[in-house]
Length: 347
Ligand SMILES: *[C@@H]1O[C@H](CO)[C@@H](O)[C@H](O)[C@H]1NC(C)=O
Ligand SMILES: *[C@@H]1O[C@H](CO)[C@@H](O)[C@H](O)[C@H]1NC(C)=O
Image 1 (tube, rainbow, N blue to C red):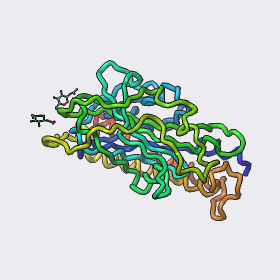
Image 2 (image 1 turned 30 degrees about the horizontal axis):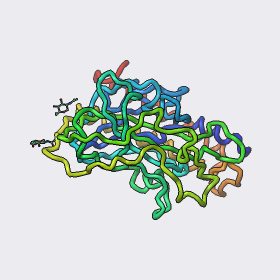
Image 3 (image 1 turned 45 degrees about the vertical axis):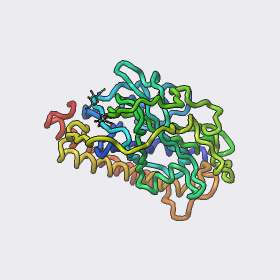
Image 4 (image 1 turned 180 degrees about the horizontal axis):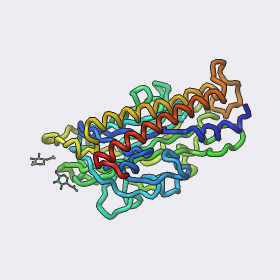
């Protein structure tokens, strides 16, 4: 196989990847927006709405100057807001994490008032892992080890109010896949934004803060770094953006608020079950692409090396994969029909 064909082929098969499936704020799980069908279903979520880029729901932003780096393309506020006590834990549940998408995983908070655009928000960092020298793993690889769950604490000293939690996975493998430029190269920013009402008696002014775009420069070492070309310097990798807010990360005060299921954005239980199973199967289907791709391009260099001996031939893999994809589409249609009937989806 000619190496130049691989990125194109991969793009055509790309499905849910580097996506967030849910966020647990202060013990309550809130479903994330699922770009492949939530718009269609008229789902109410805590995640900001965004538009598909070039028709793909999960396309990464490649340029730090792109306004879509903040909260996706043409973001609009979410219908719901999570609640959390300052000092409580938050877990971002990612899905479709690809091992060769080497890079950092970062999370920011920023105070938001109705009417503000995400670009006007001053964000401070609450977590930012790059390359773990002890584990010899990138933050995205560590996500795979923790069943793609990223847990951190909300500072206990920040003032009350509505905040945007902005989480970001920065995949660096495209910075130089091979010695020649490839289509779709460059850094890949996968960002997701969620609204959360934080209760607190805090009065601190968190710093340092940044805005997006603006928080990163194209030439930042943590943005321009090419892990495929610098395998012996991974331990020197510098995470981009400001330092993590030092602040106080104490225990939460007061009772945890119990949130009704409908206020989390989840569908009625029996529909939610079917919807979650569908997403799981869809993600498993997508993961097969990644497994296969890792076999035909084992060293992430655009296929310059020989594929692994047990790699399924491309024609065979694609035919089977498309057939399974069609079956999933039929299931999605059936699920939608059910939801329309219940009055929770747009016809
Ligand atoms: C956040 O929650 C508190 C406690 O329920 C409430 O008093 C406050 O009005 C809420 N703030 C916003 C901005 O929604
Ligand atoms: C705020 O302070 C009051 C009075 O000291 C206390 O009763 C309350 O639990 C505190 N709330 C939070 C969220 O820290």
